[in-house]
Amino acid sequence: MKITLRKTLLSTLIVPFVIGAQSASGALITDWGYQVTNELSDAVDVNNNAINAVNATDGDGNITSSTLTWGGDLGAGRSSLMIDGVSSNSGLLTDAGALQTGNSIAGGVFIHGNNPIAGGGSLKSFNLNTMLTLTAAGSGVQQSLDPIVFPSFFKETDNTVALEDCVVTTSTVACADIFTLGDLGVLNGNSLTIASPSFTIDDYVYTVLLELTDLTALSPSVCAAAGASAGCLGFVTEEKATTAFNTRFSITATQVPEPGTLALLGLGLAGLGLSRRKQAAKA
Image: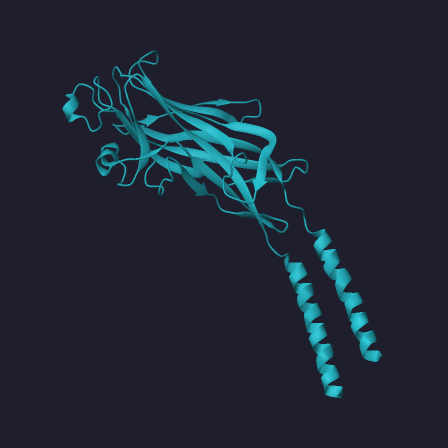
């Protein structure tokens, strides 16, 4: 009778604490607002002169687009690179799997406008910076991710050379230009997925996945011509043409046991073990 009473008492002491710890845990955040900021920076031309990006901003000072131009006068005849950003108060849904159809969000479009430049230094290299701030829809809980920086290289080819001497030939008119993002990994089809460092809110670990699409694995000779290492990713563009790649992102979550819950369960098990040892000693 006494043994049964002790077991019952122990259970009544342990269970409420465990239930209380579980109920205090935060719920999974299923819907996020987002601010994606993309910026071109640290650009230099073939003479190592700085090329400053022109950034457009919204009323809150967030960058909505970033543009580099080079070659010739500021009017027509200049080549350019531009990338925009996106934002919304909701719509990024937490997913149980990586980049499943319907749960990834467009994160910005990178566009190269290729024109025969009239003169001046052509672009040599720059950085593409992607920054993401998440806000839990409804609660306002906010998480800013560390920027992802893509060192990028560019080759404005000489269109006065014979076509047979072009590094890449995509037309019967002129040599193609080359854009690369360096050696970032292996493409899956024409896309590359990069996982950002995970972060924890309450008892869930969240990971954001960034996907770059419409890229090509370039040959070592093409990478070298642009100043990138072998294994670089990118694209080649014809003169007087526009070429683009897109970005998308998604978020996944994994539940982890709360430390307090584990500690209470451990104490409960220890208490049960101690009770059994006392019973065995009395026997």
